[in-house]
Image 1: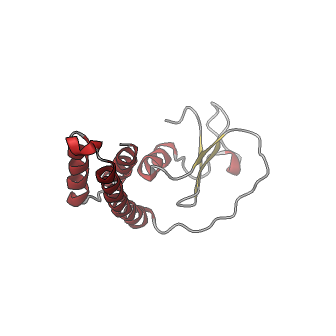
Image 2: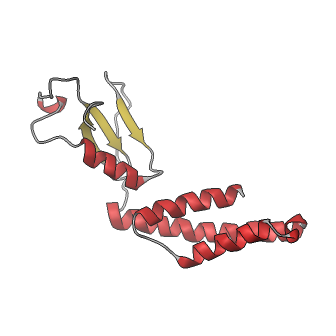
Image 3: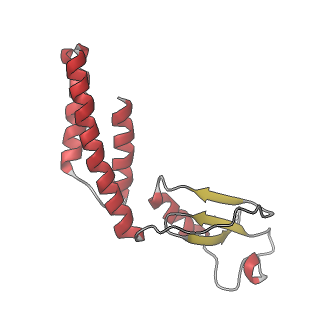
Length: 145
């Protein structure tokens, strides 16, 4: 059940980016049906179902990787400073890139604004919103959304 939960979460992320595979949904339905059947009491049958869920999860991760790459480009190693800076920041590790993308769009400020350019909106300090997947660093404020 835990494997299916994670598999479905990643499939949902891929679907949010427009990538779906009907085989994934059929496999999930088959697995849920199996878990409700008397066969779920058989250890060998449960192990077979776990391996089948693993194969489906591999397909889902491939689908999610393709969705991320086709939407945001291929990730590249990015050097970052490990020195602490004053202020607050959001660090995103890449679990739901679609939500991250929407957050970046909502918090984007125009040219000339933000602390880096000596500006600001007068309602508080601008800080950094960092995405290590797509290498975007944008100023944000807690009141910008």
